[in-house]
Image (spheres, rainbow, N blue to C red):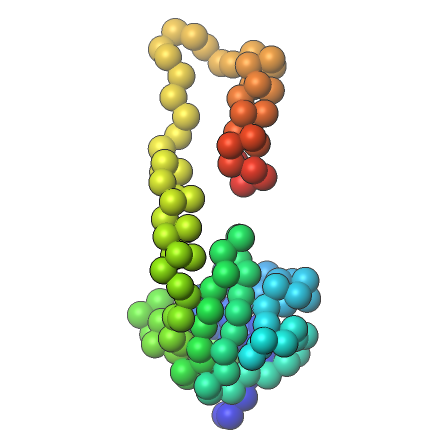
Amino acid sequence: MDKVRIDKWLWAVRIFKSRTLATDVVKKGKVRLNGDPVKPSSNVTVGDRLTVVKEGFNLDLEVVKLLNKRVGAPLAITAYLNHTTDDEMNKYKDWFVGKSKGEHREKGLGRPTKRERRDLEGFKEDVFGDEG
């Protein structure tokens, strides 16, 4: 095996949760192979560089091993070299800070009213964008 479909490889190394999701991202032009836009049916070989835009983050990966079946995470990370810059990696950490806790409401206030919920959603959109 000297080449694998790009959508299949992205799914196999656990960059995306499903092959359909990987295919859709490639179709939208958010994946580049050696700097050029690709189709989901394009093939990757060892040594290729991929630029993947995933949830606003630019991942820069180099193909080290070809996989066409999904493997466990410890094996998946051996299939590529991550050349993503520290700035991009820190961007993810900064985005993730504070996301683990749910929202807190004082005891006894009950559920938010429609107006309170709309205000809260508007605030979250202003601060976090669409992912809030």
